[in-house]
Length: 275
Length: 155
Image (cartoon, rainbow over all chains, first blue to last red; front, side, top):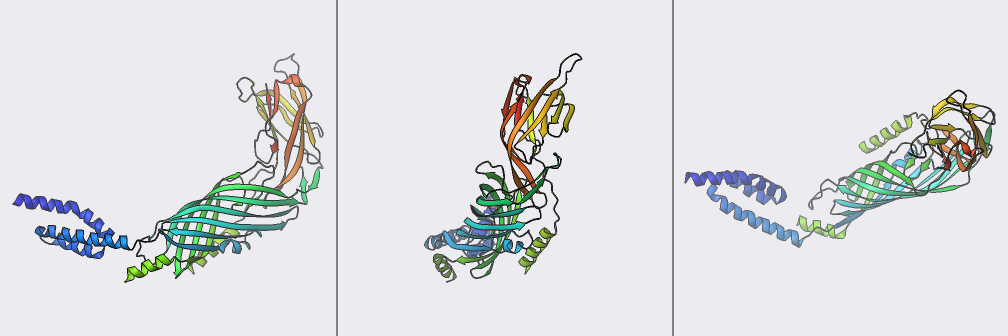
């Protein structure tokens, strides 16, 4: 008798982590039953297990009946950081709009579009450039994807492939040779076009401010830049990428305002959860 | 408000950074000496390189496996005299003129560095082919990249 009681106690100890896991995964009713079962006499274990099984079955049935939709809305984003930064970056105006689709509130395929304009007159040269860029990729959200979540914040990381088409003109350039005595020229380049690609690694925090309105910050590491065709004169500023230098890596920062086009199915699902 | 504070801090930090120019300010044509058998770098001893137009000595009696040469801004060709002095007494020096034919276009490097000339090499010629085994125009883009290779001379 003592032996069997001893074995049952060991079994309880062994199943505690699994019960704890069930507690996290399942409804509150199961949590109460589980705690009670540990505290009570071991003879009641079979009873508790049956309750546990029933609750689980009910929960599974609910989940099947009210399955959370995969598509949970479309987010339209406007970056306001780069337009403001025009005042600080030497007159390079850039803006980005983007759209991402919420799937399971975990995966967010993203499409971004932007443009850049710059027209600078320096003492010894004039530089004019403009162009567009496209980025395509996806984000993975680590926060709060449970169906019964109260807020739709997200903390996500992701990757993009970016493409840019850029036009640039350099004119009235005064050059003086350091090697040949008294040799100086004033020259201009014709308008040139370049196609550039690169890869971005992105981290983003989006906070739900009010209903379907969000604010977010995004940090970008831009690398693996490559020209689609070799060129003698490369563009100094690449839309979406920033200044093209010897450095292999560029950094970017966005501050976005977001409106979500909500999914009707999600709304219905949440209403059914609330009932 | 916290977000706006973060944004303003980043903006002020970025704008207060005073940048310096770290890019090379010259575009030099690299001539590499290569061993025709091993295809590895070949060291030419007692080499003197002189620019013809202004008699500037660019390299004076050095042992090197590569030389980096300035190009004219306003002309489409630049000629240099290569002289290899004999290693032993009584030997004779080897001399040849090497001409690079090129076009020039300016490159905007950055607001800090300004503009530098870049060149597109059309061809390269020498007046004494017996001085080495073979010559090859390897890379026609002469940009402000340090120690870039453009012409290979095989010994």
